Amino acid sequence: MNFLAWIAVGLLAGLLARWIVRDDKSGCIYTVVVGVLGALIGGALMQAAGKKGLANEFDFRSVLVAAVGAVLLLLVLQALGGRGRRR
Image 1 (tube, rainbow, N blue to C red):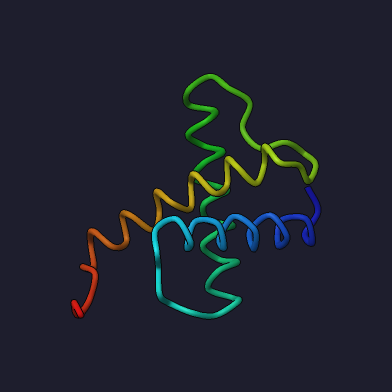
Image 2: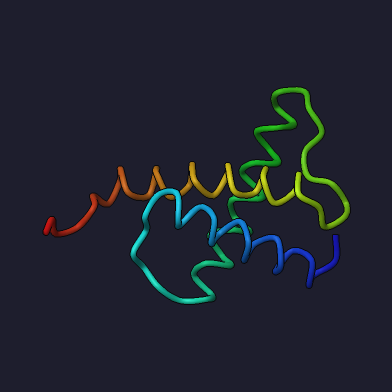
């Protein structure tokens, strides 16, 4: 995947993961970083399970794998850092 495709997958996966986890942090760069790290985590988990990791093209499966990894990343970050002040 080229650089722009990674950014696009990261943005979509980060948005989806932040919506699922209800992460209230803001920022486009934060969202892309969460999505790209999620893609790396999701791809590694898929390969460890014996499945194909991330595809070499921009497709729905790549976004889905990245979003699952990003959700896991956000849940771990929330568990380590706490959820902050409760309202």
